[in-house]
Amino acid sequence: MLTRHIVLNTLYNARDLGGLPTKDGKTTKFGVFIRSEAPFRTSQSDINFLIDYGVKSSMDFRSESEMHSRPSSIKDILPYYPRPLFRESVSVSNEVPKTRRKPKFKKKEKQFGIDWEEEYINMLENGASWAKEVLTIASQAPGCLLYHCTTGKDRTGLVTMMILSIAGVSREDIAADYCVSQIYLEPVYDSLPPMNYDFYVTPSDAMLGLIDYLDNTYGGVLGYIRKAGVTEETIQRIRSKLVE
Image (cartoon, rainbow, N blue to C red; front, side, top):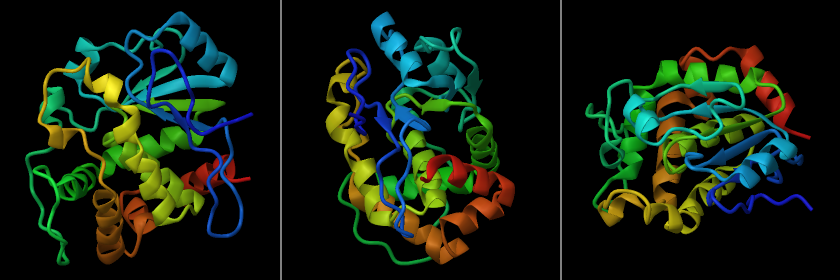
């Protein structure tokens, strides 16, 4: 039986984007996109499972320093697309852009030391060309595409939000999918350099606030995607691939 959480021995946050309802009464397909943390020191049995599952390629959103320090275990086995959101070398504990843009609407008081809503807004405002390139690759990749950053919650969460929005998944289900990373990632955090607890969290308000910002600023997630230069052909190809 297909399940959204893919249970593996050395990947903890691997999840299929299938099985989610869309606003027009359809369902997202299994075996098209998998989100995960970095496949670093992934066991051969897990690699074999992913290949048997249908994974044909992977896309990596990490900086060059992250890729170098924790190289992907599948980059030499399958087609590999390194597409860093941050071009400069940054550490895992400092993987947010320095430029700040103030949201155009009043926000709720943040719950944590790191304002993830603001960080995600900054990532997208400074990463339009990245979003375009990533979504174009996602629309063209054959078979199942596994995409990831280091923990699979932030950069990976942004791409998942855009892909699921194209598919027509509700903001509530997108936020719920984002939130569970915090639970699945506990074993991963034990292997990473010590970081402030605020780095680990995936609060629903962060993703919902980001979507609200895109609604207010661009008329929706798809408005942002189109403004970033993503073509209608790319949007339709992703939807056709992912929606039953």
